[in-house]
Image (cartoon, rainbow, N blue to C red; front, side):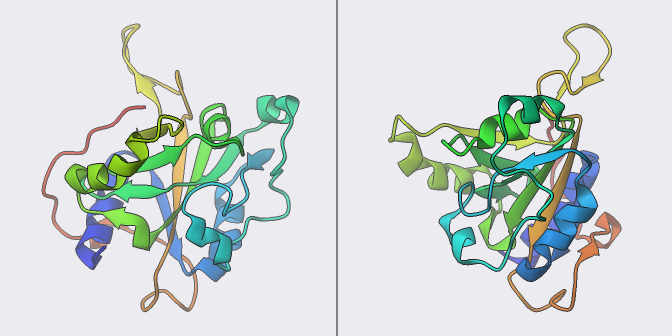
Length: 202
């Protein structure tokens, strides 16, 4: 991960209409609190995404139901999960299906709030495939690369939310240095130049 990767990632997300909040792990709960609507369900950090989150100060707000029933999921406006990887060039996040319920919590809601460590950003798809390789050899692993809100034009005009969330918000946990004093919303205009067109879809 480099500063250029972070800049590219935030610009791609802006292209896709995805909001970004960035700050240190200790500010994770506050950033999620601001991004999540009610009612909200989620998967406890460390049970979804990279194992490193289990030892991180990053937490979710108490109001996030982390042991949701089917009824809770049906009522939920927002789902909060961690992503295992981010692909800077596309603004994509890798979501691993797991027993904790990351897949339904990320799909069957109007808004998906994604918690991603800056350290888990890679520049492009070849790097993502290097990460994916060992997982692909394990037939029990299921990974989805999600890029922006769900959208389809199968029935004519573009419709958001047909096969997944209508909105996506990324909470980016910074490694250190800039931003350690608190969280902030990322302004994509401050990011570096674009290298390629973003591609959207779930």
